[in-house]
Every structure is written in C-alpha cells, then in structure tokens.
Length: 294
Image (cartoon, rainbow, N blue to C red; front, side):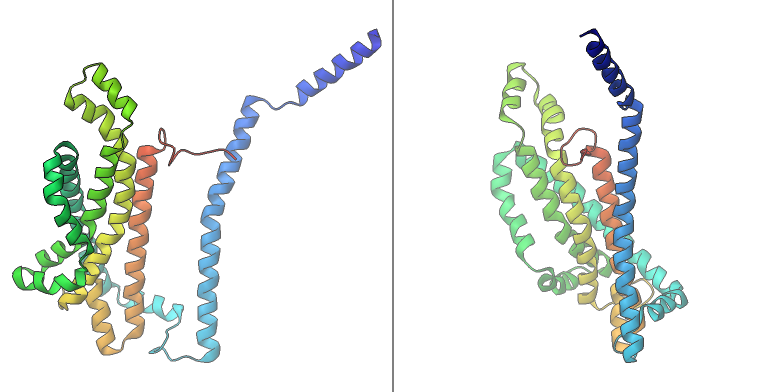
C-alpha cells in the first residue's frame, strides 16, 4: 500500500511538472492570435493575387485588345504614368467624401438625439428623412444641380443625402435600446436627464452609431461618385468619376480601370479605418468587438 501511494504521488508530481504555466498559456494564446492575424491578411492577399494572375493570363493567352479588357499590368502602368492627374482627382473625391460624411455625422447625431428626447420632433421629421433615403439620388441630383449654384456644393449635398440616413437611423435605434431595468435604476437613484443621457443612452447607442458609420462611409463615397456622374463635370477640380467619364468618351479603357481601381481602393480604406475605429472604441467592453478565444 505504501509503495502504491508513493507511485501515485510520483505520477501526480510528474503531471504537475508537465502542466503549462500561466506564462506558457499566455504565450501560446498570443501565438495563436498572431497566426490568425497573419492568416486574415495572407489569405485575402493570396486570393486577390491569384485572381489578378488569372486575369493577366486570360488577357495574354486570348490576346484580348486593351480597349476591350486591359491586363492588370497595363492598368498599373497607366496608373503610374497618369498619377498626377489621377492623384488630383483622388484628392478631390476624398475631400468631398469626408466633408459629406462629417456633415452626415453632425446632422444625423443631433437629429437622432432630438428624436430620442422629443417625440413630436420624431413624428414630424422622420417621414422626411425616410423620403430622402428611399428617393434614388440619381433622380434628384439633376434638380439639386439646377437649384444650387455651386457645383461642388451640389455634389456635397448629394453625397450628404446618401450618407445621412444610416447615421440617423442607427443612432436613434441605439438611443432607444437602453435596457429598461437600467433606466429604472437611474430613475430610482434620481439621476438627472443629462446623467441618464451621458452614462446610459450614449454607451447604449455607441455600437449602433459605429455600425452606421461603417455603412455611411461607403455610401458617402458612392453618393459623391454618382453625383459627379450625374453632373458630368470636367476640368481640374473634379474627382475620379469625371476621370472615368472622360476615359469612356475617349475609349481609354486602361485609364478608366485605373480610376475605378482608385475608387475601390478608397472605399476599402474607408471601411478599414472605421472598422479599426469601432474596434478601438468598443473592443474593451462590447461583445460585438471583444476578442474571443477558440
């Protein structure tokens, strides 16, 4: 019996020696997270790279003319050769998109707060916001261009209309989604309206606002491009949509693809920036952005 106990004790000690320490577990989790982060970057890069190589091969093997379908290598060369023109157009589109988005954020948030705090404001103005949302921007853009003397201001207004509603709608939902038990608790402790708004309604609305921001970022770019297509503007102070129109009129298809590539790249950058902002704002406390093991 004594020898059996000694043997069991030895096995327990060996198991204890083999058990990983807290530092080892943390290092293992960090390695897993790093590997997952690398895969999240590597897999899309490999897929996109493979599609570009396939595109290049199809064009070269079938000897497709560049005015029908240019190869990615020709598009890249065109982008480099015309960078001065395209970069100026890109900067104009960036400014227009960001200004429209900033105006949508300010207007949408302020109106959402008014909707949440004053019922009669929501009853009176929400139908107008819905009408602006469901009316295609391409249908009202010509009217805006007629009534607004400045073309840039008209383009900005068109982009703002497209980006405004997601901010408004999501923020209103967030302000109204605060837990009813927490509302009762704030009332029980006689919190002021400002305290209730600051410490309950704003944290409740923040995840919804960030979701709306990611949607509105892309829509503001779409609104800016569509409005410029409708305006048919030309000249130096114009955006990427004008470069696409000019290229189509001149049958410069590689140039058109280069401008289209910059539009898509700008949209991706906008989404990634706001996704990172959402992760930074919500990652330490909200379930939607918290990292989960396994």
